Image (cartoon, rainbow over the protein chains, first blue to last red):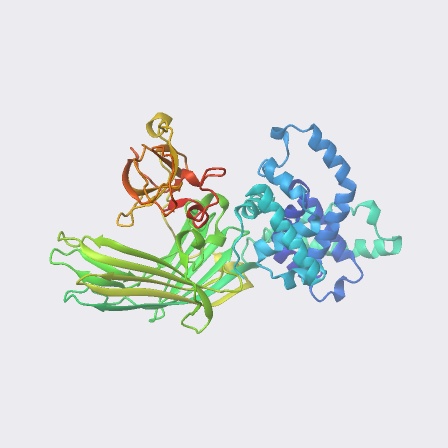
Length: 151
Length: 428
């Protein structure tokens, strides 16, 4: 039993599920986190990872991207068919879901990390493994989109 | 980094946080197979399977004794602040409030877990004693709250012959935050005004007590009176100042609240930010072991009046805007407002006859829209202000008082009289 993995899961499970909820919504967040954790801890490079928290965040983002590609068509079909009250994410209003749908996963990641984790642009760039300029652009776009659609 | 977020961003983030499910249990993870498109190659899959089983066995062991991080041995990402507070005063009265065992300077630490909706504040006094609170659910209207220790905040002021206290400066109390607005959910924002809505920025930059160059915001309350010990009202002046980091216009590094009362003296309370950082702290920071539950205080709300009680039909007339008479103080109990009405259009400096206003009350605001008797117009110096008394027929409560002339599309919406404060003339 790898104690490091035990501690890491214990330490980061809650924040990873929150992050995943921001990316893919509550109904898919558990799947994304479970797959990401399992995939990370199964990776050959895992024992040599120096920043496991950042690695897990990136892994959740990658998992959300994979899920997004395979799930997008099904989701659109369901959204068309579903009545508002039959949605499986009642705590998120349709207006907010619609606004979030305008954001890319990178933009959702950036705004989530800035809002809930108070990360600077440089820290967001490090966490998501992207350039500072890209992180700044993602954050600006996400802010502007949510402000315009929800304020 | 404490940042100001628009209501739209805050709403989206909070709805997401509210909808967040519990993290998957370890046995759920163990039962899972990786999706086929990215399944590892066979040799890697074997290695992965062995490692995954090992990891999952470990996870099951953890979760058996500890549900995620709630058991107290994990860590949590928080926004931490460290603030020093002090009071200065000069009292002219002979009988002063007894502050034996109280302190005029303190050190305050706060930890905000916004995603987990938990807030902790700790005041440390000069004798080493502490007073702590932990709030859950909301920083302003918690669903559960706990306290440990006792407040030893001094209350600086005078005692009258009949035993009444006139307080000129006091400690911050708990929960504490130098800049609480970023902590709030959108539906709390109408109740707690951001700095930009209540204060005026000074043109020249200043420096705070740590020598940091700052943008300074001020609110002057002049002309009020303090009722003291049943005697005549004493003239009172209050000044609230904020020093804000000019690089982002949001991060408050110092706040000072000063009061001067005629014949009694002056007092001020200053809080200065020394540390603000995002850090990992042990989950035990939010443990309520040894704390006493505080009584639940429901979020304040006012009964909604029947619409007819507060809605009148506005007469036709020319548009006008209004502000509160500066000599008049509004409190949540106020039922009658004293306002100054100004005609918007050019009329050679004359506002003229003010029509009864249109009033509409909602849960979060009371909208008051004035018109004045029609005029053919005139030259364009600023028009005079006409006093008018508005009978609300109910208490203002914790709602904003809003000038209807500033509503979207209304005549004054784009004018400075509306853009400076968004038409909000008062807030609790």
